[in-house]
Length: 286
Image 1 (spheres, helix red, strand yellow):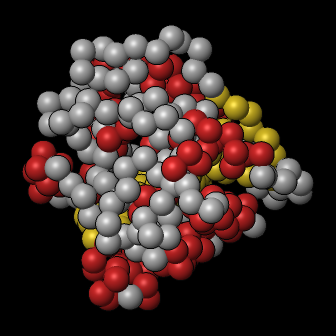
Image 2: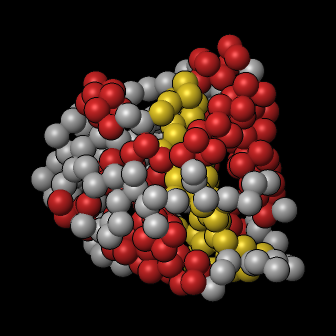
Image 3: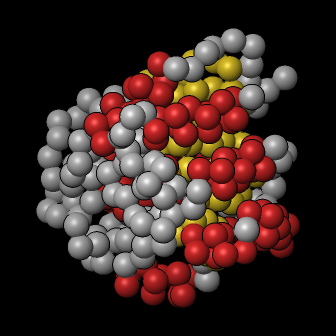
């Protein structure tokens, strides 16, 4: 039986709102390690904080990414799967980089459930927040110091953005140029979850994807239901639709890793966001 290695990445400084690192710690405290679920350890940055030009805490992000990439690669070598608890969304870069390198870019894909595209670059970002650049970095687009962290770049046509609703102009341009597929949040609300899952399945089959990573940003859910996140966006998907996507994705044989990111307990209200994150975690670990 394959085991699930749970790895906490206690880093939330790729943006400028504190709290996502505490979300990682809190979610890991609720995990029960038994049967096929094992503790894969915790990554906390050792490098001092500090900006490089406009890029916020680049050194810490590079360190965290390198350490997770190495750890995640070993998990894949052992034939196991893994669940990463963040942290801001830059915490997912290491496991996705390891997956693409281990399985090969032709067969490897990304299901990216997020209100944002996270495909900004240092030249298109208005904030310099590198948690909004991790998917561009994975595709080899952006600052060389960042893209060098990824040995095998993911194919843009093997990336599917899901529940997207907030894109900068530079991101829209990159989506057009790279042919990245998007299922927007308003389409999910309008067409229903059954049609959304049909489209995700069609994407996987048409690309011939044999292994994929499921990346979950809690801001995909509407802030009326999940307020505890640093960059909330109105008109998100419902909690039920979010959980239905998780259930469907983790039940397929192609999944090799998953993450949940951007839960900020400092911004939560009555534990609503934490409850959703815990339910998603239970589904993944089951």
